[in-house]
Structures are given as structure tokens and as C-alpha cells.
Image (cartoon, rainbow over all chains, first blue to last red; front, side, top):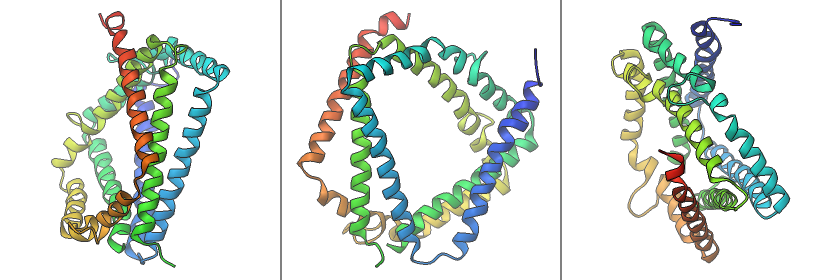
Amino acid sequence: MPIAPVGEFVVRGIIQPIMDQFATSYGLTEPILARLTSEHTDWIYSHISLLAWIIKFLAAVIWETANNSTLVYTFSDFLHTLSVNSNTFFGNLSAESGMSYIAKHANYELLNNKTLAVEAASKFARAWNNTVTYVMKAFEFL
Amino acid sequence: MPVTAADYGEALYQLLLAVIELMGGSFYLLTNNSVSADDIWNVSYHAASFGYWVAKSFVGEGGALDVMKENVSAMKNFTNLVRYIGGNAEVIFGNASGEKGVSAAIRNLAVMVDEDFALKFWNTAQHGIKLVYKLMENVSDTLR
């Protein structure tokens, strides 16, 4: 039984929250960029180091799994469960089910609602502009 | 004490090494005989289909980039980004001698590459090729 029209769901539940994420992103970075000091280089350095160790952690989990027959079996079982349900979970190119169905309808809403599409594109561009500048400023001070 | 280009070089080295280890481990795990090639194909195809529909809203016709180029307000942000990078290219990306910006960090990264790094790189490439072989052996059963 339908709980909401798909168009309403994707606008309020998917597109609006993503636009809010973009607004949060530039809302945080714009005031920082306006008062940036040379210590910003240290800040980005710490983030690169943190990212490296998070990836090292994930690599350790993967290698531990790959070298242990019980864990390989558990992983294989997980992959098989995901595989037999992947059409339901991800959907396919015709996007009649799963997350592809939601993504397709989000695309349709953006195509059919020009005001919404312009607002989303503006926020996306503003967030992208500020995020790239925020990271590149660290190399400028280096 | 503020961090230097050498510190950035070391951080980037660790980041790159971690990515190579993660990719190598993933390829090695997926080439294990207990892991079904059918399952890898099935999940990859459906995940890629979802990725296609997500990407369409950003780069497809009527997507964010398409709308941006026809709207002054959205385009202004993109132009500002290009102007900032273009106007500061040498400070950001550096120069041929590797004394500034990203080039200085990469110069320090390049001198850190050792036998262990190169060994992990080629081991990852080998596991990657084995995974491609495994998937291609199975391709005629999967795609008809």
C-alpha cells in the first residue's frame, strides 16, 4: 500500500536534504575562508593524516578477512546474500525497483521542476566552489 | 611548529600506501575461490545501475551541470572557482622545480618511494589483473 506519492517523497525526503547538505557545507566553509590564517595548512594536514589511518584500518580488516578461511566464507555468504537481493536493493537500468527507482524519480522531478533544479544546481556549485577553495588554500600557504 | 611540504609529502605517502593496501586486499579477497564470480557481476551491475541514475542528476541532460551553464547565479560560483584557481595556479599547484604548493608536497612524496611501496604497488596490480581474468572467464555466462 503506497504511503506517499513518489514525487513528494523524493522532493522532501531526498532532494531537499541533499540541498540542505550543500547549504551546510558552504555555510561552514564561507565564514572560515573569510578569516583564514596560515594555520589552515596544519588543519588540512591533520585531515589527510586522519583519512590515511581510516583507510589503513579498512585495509587491515580486508587483509584479515582475506587470510582467514572462516572470514572468507562469511564474506562470501554476505556477498551472495547481497547478490540475490541486489535487484531489489539497488535496482537495474530500467529502475523499476530499489534505490535506482528513487534516484530515477529524483531525476524526473529535477527535469520537470525548473525552479527546484536551478536552486539545487546553485547550491551544488556554491558548495563545490567553497570546498575546493577550502582545501586548495592549504597548498597556497604551504 | 607549522607543518612543511615534507610533512605533507609523508602524509600523502601514507595515504597512497593505505589506498594501495586497501585495493590490494580487496582484489585478493575477491579472487579467492570461495567467492563467486556470478555474485561479483550481479552486485556490480546493479550497483552501477544505481550509480548511473544518481550521476544522471549531476552530469546528465537537465542535471546540475546542464542547469548551471544556463543560470547566471549558479554559473557565478563555478566562474569564481575557475578564477581563483587560474589566478593562483603557481601558488596552488607549484612550479617545475617543486618549491610551491602541491608540487612541493609531491616532490617530497616522490623521494619517499622505496622498495616496500613499489612491491605493494605491483602486488596490487597483480591481484587486480587476476580479478579481471576471473570476471572475464565468466563474462559469457553472465552477459548474453
